[in-house]
Image 1 (cartoon, rainbow, N blue to C red):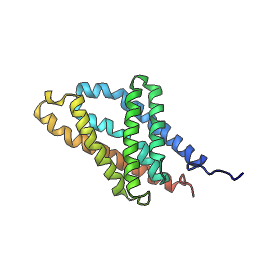
Image 2: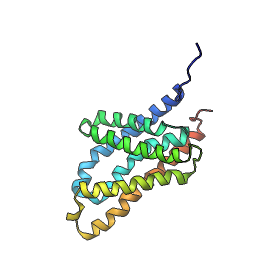
Image 3: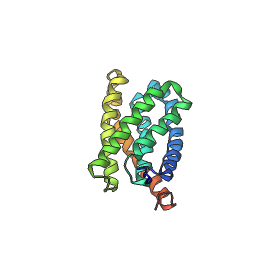
Image 4: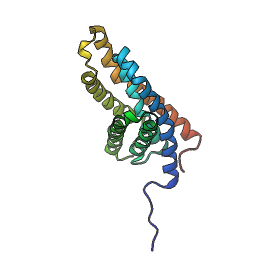
Length: 181
């Protein structure tokens, strides 16, 4: 009987797991600061929520394969949930949404184009979604005009800034030899 090749070999799964654990710890920290940020500076919440783009960005930059963003996002959500169980539905929902967007943008290029522009397209899409969802969830209409004006660029630029950080980390990991040959 011929051996069946897995689309995600063990080495890929282990790299996804390592990235998922590291970014899941950051996600846990983001969960801890969510309530204070929403209570004290809700216009800055997009910066906090934007950190959740990291698992997929790093995984895709390092591995450049289908499904690694989604898998790594889900693993990161599970790790973050271990530290903040009350946020589990939000962590998982965010992981699925962000992972599917990142996979979708990569799929549009048939997983052949790995230029930085592609990562920033997914970040901009995520930023717009964050801007709309958080606007209603936090009830920003009650904030002063200056806070509402500051909110939109922070919500959209938050995922873009975190994407730039994630790309740097991913590039460093590739150069260190983490990517399979």
